[in-house]
Image (cartoon, rainbow, N blue to C red):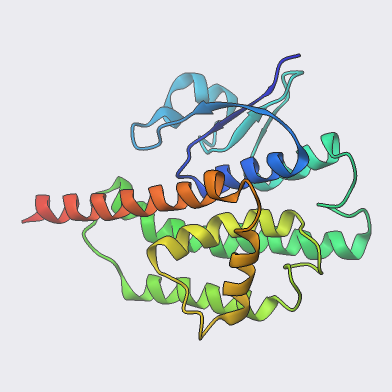
Length: 224
C-alpha cells in the first residue's frame, strides 16, 4: 500500500506539526522535501496541487490533496486515528482545540512569519523591535492560556502538537524566559519528552534559527 506523501521542509513549523501529529497517530509518511529558499513551492508542478503555494501539503493514498497544517492534522486524525484522544469527539473540547489551532495560525506562526520573512527572502537587515515585542506578547498569551499540563486539559491533543512547532521555532531564536513564562516553559519541557520530539521538532527549529542568523549576517554584509 502506498504511503501518504507529505510535501514539507524541516525548517517549516507547520510542516513539523504535521509530522508530530502523524507520529502520534502511528502514520508513516513519505516525505517529499521542498526547498523554500530555492523556490520549489513556486514551481508549476507544485502550484497545480496548491495554488496558494504553501507547505505543508499532503497527497493521500487515494489522491486527495489537503493543504494547511491545521486542516491536514484534523484530516489525519479524523480519517486514520484509532481513537479520538488527540481530537476528542465532544463539542466543547473540540471548540477549545480549534481555538488553539486558530491561535497558532493567526498569532504564533503569523508573528514568527512576519518577523522572519523579510530576512529570509527579501534581504532585510532589520530586526524590528516591535515585531520582537509581539513575539514575546505571544509567549505571554499562551502562558496565560495554559492552566493544566496541556493546552486543553490534561492530555496531549492536536492543540499542543500544532502550537509547539511554532513556539519551539520562536524559542530557538528568542529563548523563553522561564521566570516570566513559567507555565509556557513547563509545557515546552513536557512536550520535549515525547520520543519523537527531538528529531522532528527540536532539530528543525534549530535549523530554522541557524538559517535566520546566516541570512541576517549575509544581508548585512551585502548592505555594507
